Every structure is written in structure tokens, then in C-alpha cells.
Length: 440
Image (cartoon, rainbow, N blue to C red; front, side, top):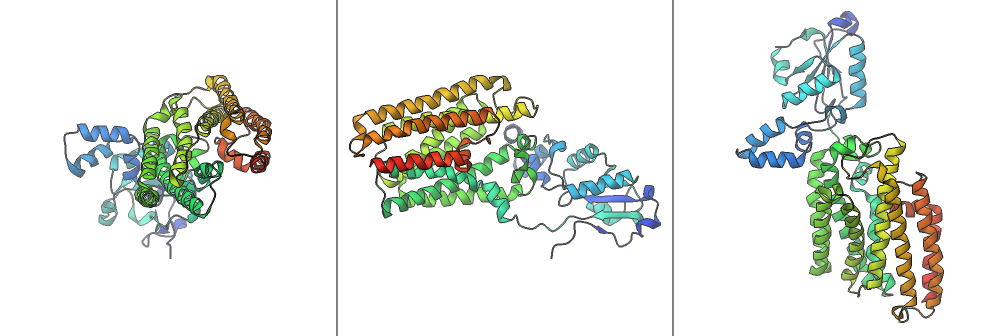
């Protein structure tokens, strides 16, 4: 049974028997006040700098790493503190009680946290055991570290971005557009979907680890499972290789070529997380390429020929959606009165240019689709190709609506998920599917 997060030390008298000014609140830093691990916080406070210092330190083994982590720059103001424990501490401070943190390692970081929160100092578990304390042992209240419980399925689903799996349905597009829907091809497409989902979830976890500091300063991303402390960093580090191992196994079952495409996707995703997402427009082109790579993987996975029309159309569509995503993020910051993002190479003043580029890419996608309907490539696949012209106004409507909703700040920062959740968008997509089926 889980123990309470705090308890009175047996030797302490009733609180009313000791004046408030003479009482001391002693809080375990890790497991009680801090909903994370100091070691992991130090490691991921600036991963690139940590690796550079470790490589240039000239020392070997864990001793060098410990020294480097002890000197890491941790943002104490945005760490995931337990709100109940923190409120108890602030209430004790208001009553005039002294407050000390118990920390067995990284004393400098523990002291920094204590100073930031206005506490009186730190003690070690050895100090408590030996009784060598800077306060009266007979009048302390102890908030112990609680027994940690495994993260819930809801927390894991949030961390793995299960809702983002909707994007991986793009692997089914080549099967549908090539009219090769049968039990075998759909089975391989489903396995490709699972492989991409596992691979993407591992990449999302890695991205969140690298973005911990930035996410905690973001008005919405600070609620992510890792940033908020709902999911331990150590658990994410174990989940990443497990997810990628499953993705590799599923890919090998499909084909070595599919594994190569998935490997390219993962390598590009890692490059995006480490470098490219901080480069202006490189991030947009990379995102568009990653979306299109899902379609390529779907074609490779089921063994159908990928249409160059579909690939070009996809690149313009996803470039537009990536630009809308950036527009939504920047407009949200503008509406909240926030400064330019520190982890993106964009400025709020870029909004008008980004909106124009998003609209241009969307119209290019519609143009490519119109040229495809006018080409001879459509004849072998559709008996009534003229019906496909009815999809053109629907595409114009959907892109125009997406741009308008983003301009009105009424779209989440991911337009693809918006398409799945927005009623008019779902109706538009359903109508286009019906038209395509009627044209066959």
C-alpha cells in the first residue's frame, strides 16, 4: 500500500506544543518535493553541452560524468515540483517555521533549489541519522519521499502521443490510390502502420527529453508527461529502445527495403530533434518530407508503384500544413504576449510571410491535383475521371478554412490532427472519398 507523502517524526511533540517559530519542516527533495530525478534533470538540462564537456574533460568513467552533472545549469524555477508539498512548505513558511531539504546527492543543486524557493538550507540523510542538525531535532515535521507508483496508461498514452498515430494512416494512401485493397496488402499496410507508430513514439520521447527546458516554459507543452514529471525520465529512457526494437522487428517481417525507409525516417527525425527544427524553413521542409516518407513507406511496404503525381501533391500539401503549424505556434505566442520562441528560428513578426507561404503551397497542391486529373495517368485507374474535378473545390475550401482558422487562433498547433477533430473537415474528407470511389 502506498505510504503518505508526509508523516510526523515519532520524536516530535504535537505541533501545538511548540511555537511555530521553533518548529522545522524537513522535506525530502527527491520523491517528495521534486517530481523528477536530479541526476536526470542535470543530464538533460543541456544534453549537447553535457556531451561536449564530457568529451573534452579528459577524465574517464562515471567520476567525470558526476563532476560534469554537478556543474550542470538547471533551471530551478521550472522544475516539476509537487504542488501539494510545495503548498505545505509555503504555509509553514508563512507560520514562521524553518524549512530544510533532505538531499543525498548533488548538494549544490539541492542548495540552489532551496535558495530559489526561499528555504533555510539542506541536510543529508546522514545528518538526520546522526542528529548533527542545525535545528532542534525534537521539533521537526518530516515530509518523506513517497513510494513511487508506475505511470498510468493515460500518462503513457499521452507521452507516446497515441493521438498522433492518425498521421501514420498515410501508409495506407498508396494502397487506396493504387486500388490494390485486399487482405494481404492491407495486412502489410497495418504492420507498416504499427512499425511507424512505435518508431514515432520513441522519437517523441527522445524529442521531449531534449526539449525539457523549453517545454517547461511553454504555456501548453509544460503539461507534457515528461515536462510535468508525470512520467519519470528513467522510464522514458527504457521505453525508447524497446519501441525502436519492435519497429525494427516489424520492419524486417515486411522487407529489408521497408526497414531502410523506416531507418531514413528515424535518422531524419533525430536530425530534426537535434538540429533541423532550430533552423528556419529547414524544419518546414523536413516535416513535409517526413510526412511524405510515410507515403513512400506505404508503397514500399505493400509493393505498389508510387505515383510521382501523388508524391509531388503530398510535398505541397504537407509543406502548407507545416507552415500552418508554425503560424499557429507563433500566433499563440503573440496572443499570450510571449517573446519569440527560444528553440525555433522564427520571430512573431514573421507571421505574415509564413501565412503567405502556407497559402501558396496549398494552391500549388490544388494545381498539381488539377493537372493530374487532366493527364493520361488518371485513365487506367478511373472509369469516370471527370468526377475527380469535383474534389478541386473541396480542396480549395479545406485549405482556405484551415488558413482562416489558424488566422483566427482557433486551430491547435497541429493541422493534421485538426482535420480529424474538426466537423467540417471530416465532412469534406468524407465527401472527397465518396467522389473518388464513385469515379472508379
